[in-house]
Amino acid sequence: MKHSTPTTTVAPVLSVEGLSRDFNIPVPFLRRLVPGRPRPVFRAVTDVSFEIPRGQTYALVGESGSGKSTIARMVVGLTRPTAGVVRIAGHDLFAPDARDTRQAMRRRIQMVFQDPQASLNPRWRVEAIVGEPIRAFGLASGRALAARVAGHLETVGLSAADARKYPHEFSGGQRQRIAIARALASEPEFIVCDEPTSALDVSVQAQVLNLLRTLQSDLGLTYLFISHDLAVVRHMAQRVGVLQRGILVEEADTKTFFAGPKAEYSQMLLSAVPKIRKGTDE
Amino acid sequence: MTDLLTLTDLVVDIPHRRGTLRAIDGVSLSIARGEVLGLVGESGAGKSMIGNAVIGLLARPAHVAGGEIWLGDRRIDRLAPHQMRQLRGRRIGMIFQDPQTSLNPLMRIGDQLVETIRLHRPMPAASARTEAIRLLDEVGIPAPEERMAYWPHQFSGGQRQRIVIALALAGEPELIIADEPTTALDVSVQAQIIRLLKRLCADRGVAVMLITHDMGVIAETADRVCVLYAGRVAETGPVTEVLSRPRHPYTVGLMDAIPSLDPARGEPGVATLRQIPGAMPSIAARPSGCAFHPRCASATPDCARVRPDPRPAGRSEVACPVCAPTHEDAAS
Ligand SMILES: Nc1ncnc2c1ncn2[C@@H]1O[C@H](COP(=O)(O)OP(=O)(O)OP(=O)(O)O)[C@@H](O)[C@H]1O
Ligand SMILES: Nc1ncnc2c1ncn2[C@@H]1O[C@H](COP(=O)(O)OP(=O)(O)OP(=O)(O)O)[C@@H](O)[C@H]1O
Ligand SMILES: [Mg+2]
Ligand SMILES: [Mg+2]
Image (cartoon, rainbow over all chains, first blue to last red; front, top):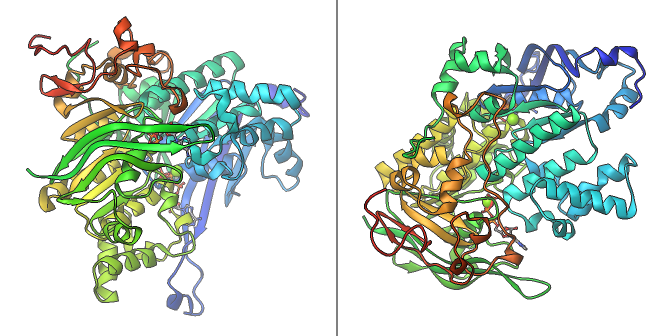
């Protein structure tokens, strides 16, 4: 891999500093006619800072609407921050002259979206969906490309024969796995996973989580991991950040966090996990 | 309690380039008024297909090829499309796995709710608006009055999912089919939705088919569970029974694969989750006999030949002659 600056070896894979994002609030038609009033805005993310060192997993947790996906989209360059800086391996992703940086980063950063539908073109066969990043980045072509697609599908628990099918021929969880296979296809170094396994049953979830962990230890991948499932977070992450109404209210190592979360909101999150009473103990 | 929904020997076929694939292969189940039935099973087991068959929205070319579906004393698997449309929304509310399916991206959500409410329950626009705000509040959307003016894309994933739930409740249906209704929700909102569903069951006698892969949600919500494997019922019974004493080897495997917050189950960020070996067979290549036998540690040579039907075992019914022999097993 060629890097343009020497800082890359020491800089964390991701560092965000003072990140904020405002959204315009829709107002009913009549109220919009009132003159002289500024358009109201809603601050979805407020002054968030954190870092992820290479090879580590950072989990963002927090209630629905707390700003997790908004942060994820800023980190991969899809949404422009209102304020703050996103650095990938030391490069400012939104610097005025950063178009080339964003281009160069595209292969190295991938995102698994919360809504798999969003990343699957319904008119493409699976082979095209998973093969597109491989072709676009010139990683393989022809037979080698087909073999890679088959390999990625098998990695996520689908079969090589599924390459010929269209997304609608799959169940919800199978579609999510196609999205994960696509994210793996460009062999990224940093993957943002927005609820990657929430549509998956426990058995496939175990398979996908174990896979993400294996890839991490084999290839040194770095993850930003968004999940509302604290058991999954505990299993995956080294560090946890808790988001409440766009503000990072707590940040701690996973062990410390689960041993005794400090913020009241974190304690509430932990106590609300549905419990299963099993007769057979382990 | 009387059964509101009854499926007997439901078969769903998908005609294909070469031959026909059998997605659902003889499933029988029932849900009483006021009851929550949890439908669980691995991805691809056929959970969504069963839900879609009940509301008559199977994606072509999939279709009901056998068996019967009854809503109360009315058989509904043979209804004409316009008759089915009348049931949908009014008597049966559907929460789809993918929120995008139910939301119109070009309509403010307030308008969508008001329209749906008035379609099923004629009332003045102002009352429908009040009702819409109440529904949004009930599913935990903050500042519901302001949010009426939002477009779907302006909500977070979990908020969209809750709006879909509000839409499904708008017609005050008797039966709610909820396909993964809480997957994108954090635990506090999830708990709120679970309470809401349970209250609808208790107060209005609504029956709920809860499709989910989350055993925690099943444990908190369902009265009975039906475990599906490769288009067939593996095990069904009261939730306490099935979760505390899973009998079918597949159910046992599912329970073991759940990540846990319990410190006794390994160091955080270190332990590997237990997996059921292998994967659910694709519907084009289902094994003979018991479809689970290639992945099953207790399989006998018979398992590859004889297709087991559910039989009583304790308070459950289990489709496994090895784990649930015909005699009652009283001891553990
Ligand atoms: N385009 C937009 N316009 C207005 N508000 C928006 C827009 N996008 C997001 N929001 C608001 O920003 C807040 C944060 O949204 P975000 O999608 O980041 O939440 P989240 O933490 O990912 O939640 P979830 O767990 O439900 O997916 C929400 O209240 C949402 O309504
Ligand atoms: N048009 C089709 N052609 C071929 N196979 C199909 C088609 N539609 C669905 N299937 C298959 O039918 C099976 C059942 O799908 P279904 O959507 O019911 O699964 P599910 O149990 O809801 O899974 P999930 O938990 O992933 O949502 C899957 O294996 C799917 O691949
Ligand atoms: Mg989100
Ligand atoms: Mg499904």
